[in-house]
Length: 175
View 1 (tube, rainbow, N blue to C red):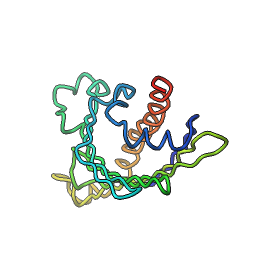
View 2: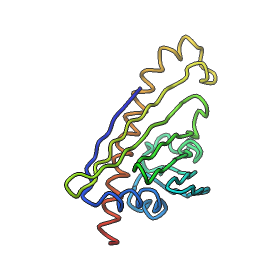
View 3: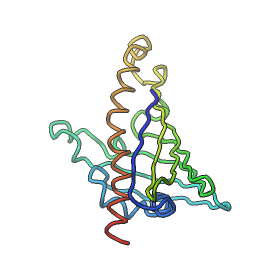
């Protein structure tokens, strides 16, 4: 399932872009549904920076009745991102801790300046691969896949918007 998100951030393009790319660990305090985020790998090649970030979601978003059965790895994901400062673009893909290999999550965010503000245009795609869902008969998984994709996009989209809001808050508080 494809999705798009467009947000306006009231700060200059280069500042927004570099804050998103370089201040991940500092941004966590502005993301209430994230327990931790850590950059474990960083490679620089001219204007291109490749990052591997490990995230863990907060259990506070999990309903209390099921919280005892939810393990940290179920709320974790790895974010592989390629940030290109020459085009102000970030190409990303996620590996989810739950159902590894059964869900493809990838996209691109383009940052552009307009009237002194930054516009972040994100296009992404979440695809459930029914044949890779362990323990679920294929015919059931194929019927459930579109609903699962819609559910995941519904969960993830607000979080992606929160990351833009976190950048704005961080810049407002620190610069």
